[in-house]
Image (cartoon, rainbow, N blue to C red; front, top):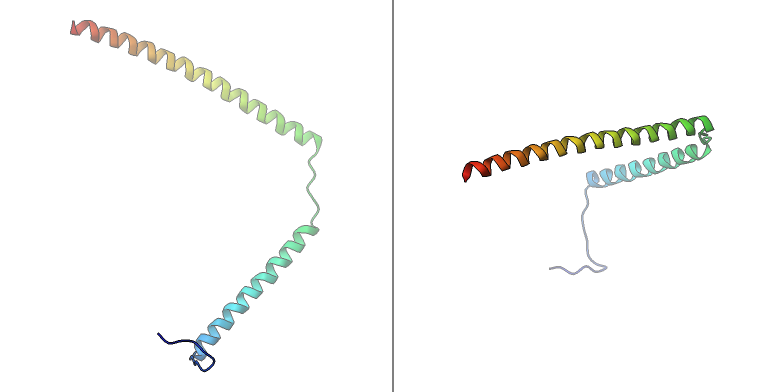
Length: 98
């Protein structure tokens, strides 16, 4: 392995230097574009929520929760029916095997 010192030389083609320069310019351009977007976003006014909108959203959430609870109760009833049918089938199968 060669050691790197003050007398070491390395060669880079113009094509590589051009590509590296383009990459740096692209990153710098993206950086300034991002900074401009952030500054613009900070200047935009915040969107206020009216009390009516808050009330409507709260009501929608509460209705959704109630609907989910009703669905869950219906599923529990179906599960209970299925379990009772399985118990009946299991009992019949046990009686057949005696």
